[in-house]
Length: 286
Image (cartoon, helix red, strand yellow):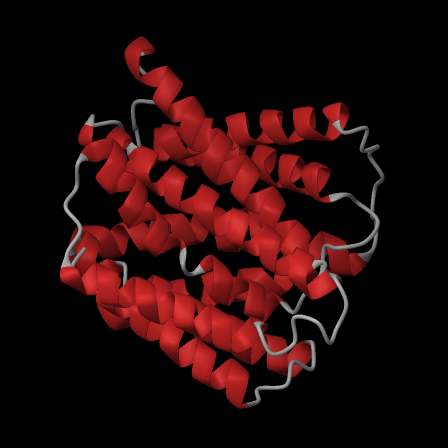
């Protein structure tokens, strides 16, 4: 049963990268994120109420929950949407997977969590992997891939920072479902504000592709996967459960090769191997 949970979590999260790429087009990224987070927040609140989870957040913890929502559910998601509009979703997912490196650095600075030698080697592997994949084609394919890489890196940094704030909120004893629900609503509000401030007008995409990918992202890749993941954390502990995050880019790469015609040549395969090895080194010391 635990093995099935592990595999299902990696598959659902890995499919999220391709589903995100399918949303590119009519509806701008900030509005897509805002709509997705509203639906996810409502589902999580309903689930929490059904399970009898306390949904209120103490006043002293609200700034931290708001910060987690801003970083994790707004900035990181908008940046990843922008990345998948400019590069294959599998490559964007690989860059995003380096968020564990940024989380470790930020946790060291903010929470005084020590950094091990394993982290250093993991970081070096991650940097090497990114260089192998992106440097050869940096000047050959125009600016779009570089812009996609920059957006994906921004998503990784925001995810790492949001994860660190989330660790603080867990240490404070806040219910996970409540934090995720209110964080999703904060993310929705921040994404909508982003759109308004940048003059990004709302446009509705009524295609079946957009609707299906939207429901997948809001329900399967958000609510269901978070619940599965935290069930794994309960069964295995946070360190071993986090190994699902090392498998997600593999799933995303395979789906990208199948549906986006990503060529899995030696730079991609060698770079992916280096990045995943780096993730494992970091997570092994988590």
